[in-house]
Length: 370
Image (tube, rainbow, N blue to C red; front, side, top):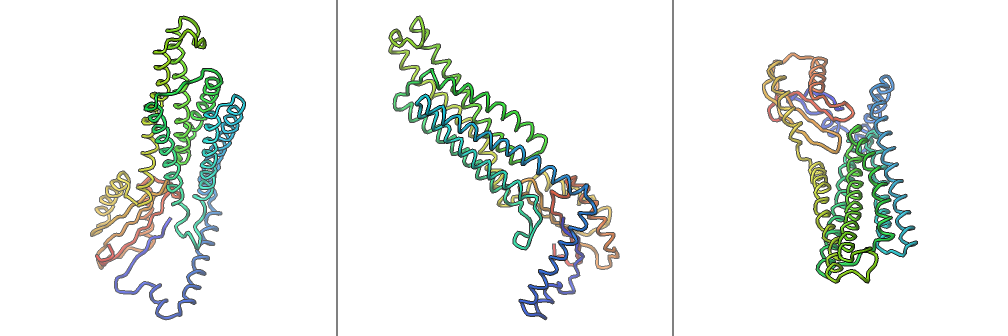
């Protein structure tokens, strides 16, 4: 992406000449016509090289398939939770099902984003739709952080108010079934995330991990409560008549205490994702790529005798934006074809697929352009 530009400091840019010699409306019309013709040229070039275009399209299709499976799985879990909660008359289980509906909405947002991020740039979004990915990931990560914080506050409030009684019947059955379901989706999205290197799938994977751990925590809490009650009653934990008051009191604190610990630990992963995507939105230079481009340009400058250079890097989701300004001597005799080959050399050294980078390289004899 991006075109190499040889800039001459003694001449005005062509756009400035157009603005001084033509009315604004005609200038804007010419600019739009020029952009349209360039895009048509891009499309004709892409049709001549189908191998380069099919890769991002196939990647996007696979990503969307994974996200759709995750979204519909959340819908199944929501229906199961609400239905089971109504059947056993458990408000907590029904509420858990309604929370899963939020995941369905977030999943739909991810699917829509995945469709747009590889879309061609247009007159409105002239740099493409790459900025949508970190925005969506940041929003989803903040929702997950909110869920974890809400769970912690709710559990802490329960502890301060004396805990609560946990029934070992329908809630235990629901937790086991939901855990196995979430575990299967966690494994599936984890493998897909590694294969496709998708941040959108990564957020979904963390969401399934949080569900897994919370359901597993509930199962562990049920087990601990059963052991406590059975050990003091000398028989079945369900025989409340033989359970000592101290055991009943202790059992009331097991589930909220475990939820407090788990919710704090689970908050770490989405918080890290939120911070990383916030950095993308405010265009913080990624350290790894910044150091890499500096190393590449040092070698390029020595090889071709460039006087100086300046670089600007940013990251937006899975896409990178790299701008390089190179200072050459006034008597530099390089041709445009030579400069294009140097740009290709830089792109090859970066080792980033062309559809994941916006690379702009310009040459100038005037230091102020750096």
